[in-house]
Length: 547
Image (tube, rainbow, N blue to C red):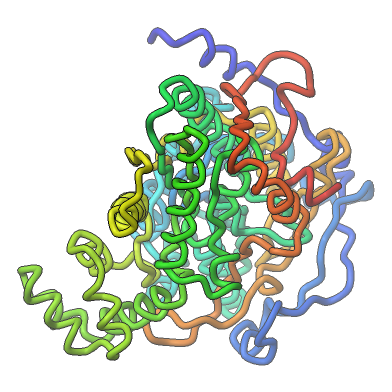
């Protein structure tokens, strides 16, 4: 099979490891710290995780671990949406397992968590692994969004593991997937199965992070990919000088991607959902602010600009947040009744009848297309599918309407974009290639140390890779209780943009200048070969947070 020169070169790239993970695996041991507690709802979370709550943070240091050379069988699952670097997590895990014992085996469950329920597996061999090193995508074994959350499912997973002789599972996923990993770890521990479960922090959204998980993998590559595209549009808009580009960016609820892309490209306007919520800014107020911007720029002869919009903004506007919450509960409790209604008119009437008066008023004020998008099927976790709500089109339409109301002389031509899937399977940057490989190798050492219910952690990511600090944290320490499908459930708390954090503060100090200056930045394509300062640098978010 013919392959591109870049693909061939990426196959041959040798990811960098932290110094602490180099050398013989039986000479690396886990140094355990003090007991931990969940971020909130401690009593409730503890009651649900009797065996795996309060575990200590682990850090790998020189020492002795003779069990690291035992022959083992490990199963790996890719869960949820794709993120650049997933293949390197598996590569690091594979290489660690084989370095411990060449007879050990790694099985991949096909199609995500559903693979373990349906006993669909493939053994990952050297020949197979070498076809996917340093490449984007999850296609080595595929992914899926099946939730592992019921005791019946756990029993099936247990049988599959026993049949294959698997004594450890590694689940590569986001906050919901790692919550499921923690539930499965607790189930296996209560049953005394001896099967460990390890999580790996994946999501381009950037909302799976804390002091120990400094960034989720894939965020670096995705934001650099989007920033290249935004920079290209900025070149175009600065040339044509006649369009406003409204660019919605993937990121689910959090605005980490939008903020990072703003830091990289310096747009005329960037909405941060968390700020909208903090200030209680309504949809009408956002539209007013955007319309004011268009008019002020028009007075300087600038009838163009670039606007960045986070995917989940609609969930943060106070009136929309209440509406979406009510819609989620209605669909959770009256889903079957709602599904029997085949036409839009019937569905809208059904919602209007059951919504509160304020939410009904908001719902009725929205364009029909937005109403339909808000009523679409929820994702497997009961959340509205914000990527399918065309907020960018809504804002263009509302700004245009507001300009008409003002009898404005400003010329306004809005073009809409949504950047999401373009970044999820890109060739991982050197940073993500290194980070993911380290996370996978590190996951093997957590297994070899007899730890379960842990998430692979690599810290100090603003420094060169050999100085990174590998270890693991109990998944339960990231949890709180949240309403899901009408019930209180334990979940990993999403990490949203912190308004008192360094990245947002830096952005806030510059955005008024960027509104009018057109100080656009053009990051260009991700570079894989060349000086470290060009190829290996982390995101601006990470650099500011760890400064």
